[in-house]
Image (tube, rainbow, N blue to C red):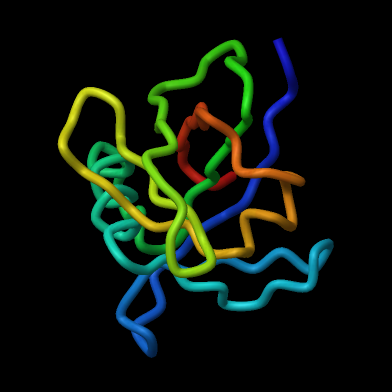
Length: 116
């Protein structure tokens, strides 16, 4: 088991999408686009006031308490398309993924929880 990485997405009214900041890797208002916002909407559906911010834990290896997994489908447009396992949903993860992984993982294991 590995320790997951963490980002804290929140809804940007200005951009009309989910975004996150991570000063440790020089990202500010990094947007989720191309199907990724809809996937995140599914992951946060049971969290009250999720648009105010949530914590998203993610890893290339299973970890205790992960909720869902995503599988790499294909490369494209400089990023990678992942499918939410158990659904037909796909979302594109931009090259910011490479701030966390040297190569695109075959699987991502995720957990979303309320912020704080």
